[in-house]
Amino acid sequence: MHLRNAKPVMGSGWNADEPSAQEVVLDTMSPIRETCLSLNDVEEMIFGFERKYGLSSPDFFGNPEAKQRVPEDDAFRWEALIYHRFALKETYQEVQSEYLARLGRSPEEVRADRETQELLAA
Image 1 (cartoon, rainbow, N blue to C red):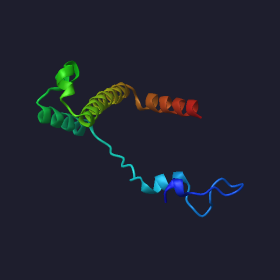
Image 2 (cartoon, rainbow, N blue to C red; image 1 turned 180 degrees about the vertical axis):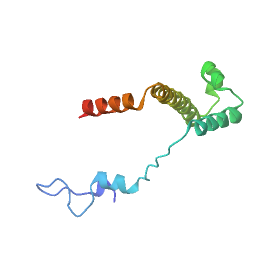
Image 3 (cartoon, rainbow, N blue to C red; image 1 turned 120 degrees about the vertical axis):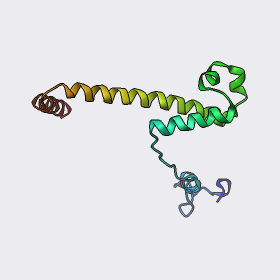
Image 4 (cartoon, rainbow, N blue to C red; image 1 turned 120 degrees about the horizontal axis):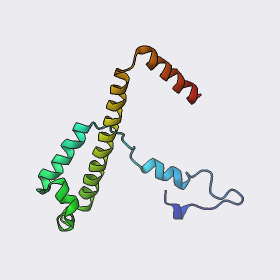
C-alpha cells in the first residue's frame, strides 16, 4: 500500500480498511537484534578494524587524515566500540571495587548493608 493512494474518510481521517502509516512502516522493518558483548568481544572487534585499516585506535582518533580514509559506517562502528570498551572497563572496575570492599567485611556487616539498601529502595 502506498500512502498517497490512501483516501480520507469523512470524520475518521483515513480509511479503516487500510493499515496506518505506522503499521506499514513497522511491518516492513526488520527486527532489532540485541547483542551482549563482553570486553574481550569488543576488543577483538576493535583489533579487527585496526588490522583492516592498518591503524591503531589512537591513530584513528588522533589523525583526521587517517580517519577520513575509513568509510563512514566503519568509522561509526569503530568509535562506538571504543566508547563501549571504555564503559565496560569502568563497569568492571566498579564491580571489582565493590567486590573487594565486601571481602573485608563480616557477613553480618554485608547483610546489614544489603538490608539498608533494600529499605532505601522501598
